[in-house]
Length: 431
Image 1 (cartoon, rainbow, N blue to C red):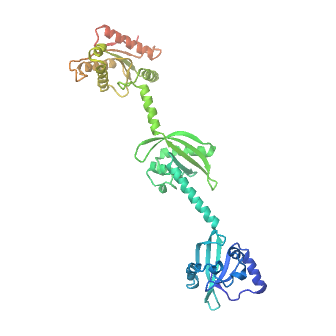
Image 2 (spheres, rainbow, N blue to C red):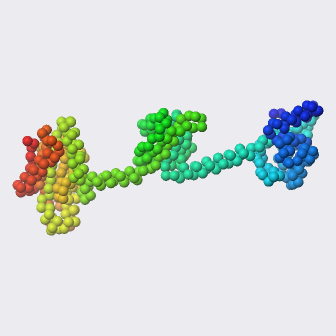
């Protein structure tokens, strides 16, 4: 848009047509001389000023409003146009006679005569009040929404159909150890190990294709290298462009998961010794029996009873008896493999299930534990206390209906060891 040249200005019918056109353009159009006095104003300007054209022509904006002090501020803005010949485009806010405040986007250009001298200015203003108010409301709503999403106890994110993060709250940023601006726009495979990202992406594709939400437990390693557990709800969503996306909300349930595991551990282990308890031992034993039969591998069992343990409790007290049990278990663990299943099946009774172990090898292990038990001084405060144990061993037979048959045979061997004077190992082969 070039500077306005006032030569050849329309007159008569042509001028009326121009004025009618300017009244209908949907913008506030006016001209002013070098003193800021109106030389023309279209219908919208006159409506805003609240005066007819005859009362406006020849007066400044401040004179029309009856507030001369306004001219100084306006002259400062207009001076660049009328003195320096600049074109100025800027946002302006004005208080109108009715007390309302309106915001305009104004473009002001110099008017020139035939010799190119600046004679005034042309102003075109668009009322953007509603637009500005809407932008303010949107900013306020975004700020409020960000505050809510950043402070809820969940990871919240949006991913599009090309695997890019479109939104991430502060919890997501903390989990990845990156600022939010370094997450948004990046691929999930850039932020997570590829195998994990691919697994999540397969789920995302399923959700977008089916239009059905999905809730499940997920596990991730955070920026500190700690394993975290989440309960995630992922829902399908269509963005403003009409493209499919997913919204994910993941609540950290690590503490709950750890509590669940601890409760399961407590339900499966003996609280005094840390061994498997009787119920868990029998469940594991049935699994090992099935595996042994499938693989054709040997499986042996050692049943153990600490000799005269009641006398230890009666002579030294139950706290000392507890220490004896704990020390005995600790010594056994030094001999056993991680694959062996060690359980406390009664007060002073223990069982050791030995996968991939023949009866002969089981007897050797029993003898090593028996010898170790004799050499053990379980309670430092009672140097005269010595303990021994009796052992019964057997191996799984093809004719055994289940683990109980093997358990009964090993228990019978233990009974024989006790009948033969205790502190010995008896092996009872399958029939």
